[in-house]
Image 1: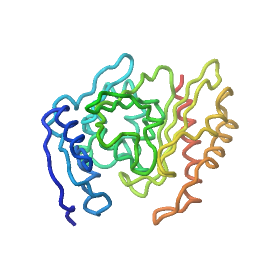
Image 2 (image 1 turned 60 degrees about the horizontal axis):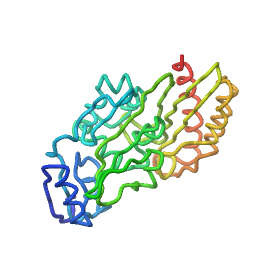
Image 3 (image 1 turned 135 degrees about the vertical axis):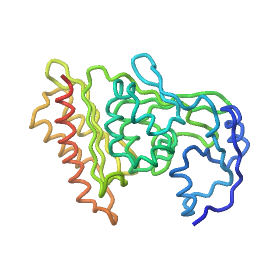
Length: 285
């Protein structure tokens, strides 16, 4: 199936892209197109205009940002996956990429496009929330920063306005955190049935801070605060992990579809929470 008719504009600069988005209220930026074009083909979205940003210089980079990492929104998935800097500063994202799509898709798709697409089953939003990433949005009126936790608002819905372009993703340094990512899917590279991304910080043998983030079991990637509360302030032992797993399962309201029913997804959340917490705790040392 082919997409419905649309205008095509090719931006040569960030300013040109921002002006095109502002001048065309029913426009969408086109980066890798791995998700957008498929949805247009299925008539799930019908933008009147696409603003192609693939030739915009300066949006594809991975560089140090203090003790963290700054990633340009146009950076291709495989460049992020194979980056030594990302592996050193944000290993949770590198680990997640072992479950994300396939090589050919990652060659074309971009991290920024994936985040703005905000698919409820996507892995990278869960990672962004788990590590406390900051997303930098730009319009003709200037820049603003949005915490990843506030960016994802619903299925395919984000805090970005129509005239804004995601230009950079900032990942904080890992420090002494432990991390772990796990998902359940029918086949490697398929859309996830359940995702859990976890970060832990321990002090004197007790949990100082925890983030347990779920995806594919709700309208968007979200922290499971009851699970985090079950961990914070105490030792990370088998009893605490079990309490957190039960709290995580109780905190989600998953849907049923042809891939898995709600009961299976809820059980998967508990199992993945146990798995990721054990692995994260081991890595805290």
